[in-house]
Length: 165
Image 1 (spheres, rainbow, N blue to C red):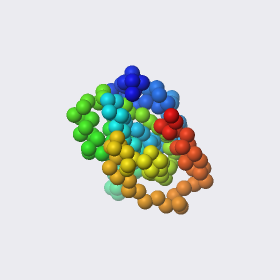
Image 2: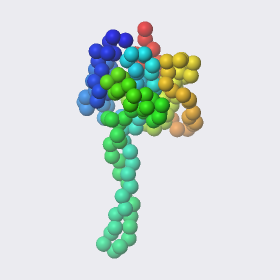
Image 3: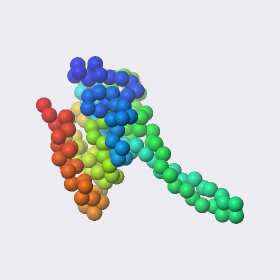
Image 4: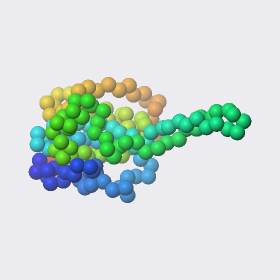
């Protein structure tokens, strides 16, 4: 626990035990799986966050017709504190400096993002751990979503430092 206290920085994400820098982000990453830990109690939360979001703009041509242009922009991931209202309220009460935000793994596809979060929640025994903030697991995952290149995802998850003593 002391190690976490020494590494906390209010506005940063950590990756591999050190503050995240732009050059640490794989170029093909679209999202990441993360853990937020309350330093004092060791309570934790696992989640997923997309690094991009889609936006649609209406563009009017010279002839007066309107076309929709879709693009992708960076999401709010740098300032993100979870989708859990309970956790966000707890962070607000305790103060951001009392928590560590750690990126566990970067992922390259939406299906790996969804599967990875759920797999971690099961692998950590989250629903049975009183230190876990996560209140539910509810994802529908289809085998057809996955590409052959994602077959090593489960092995990558098993090798994360959170599973090493």
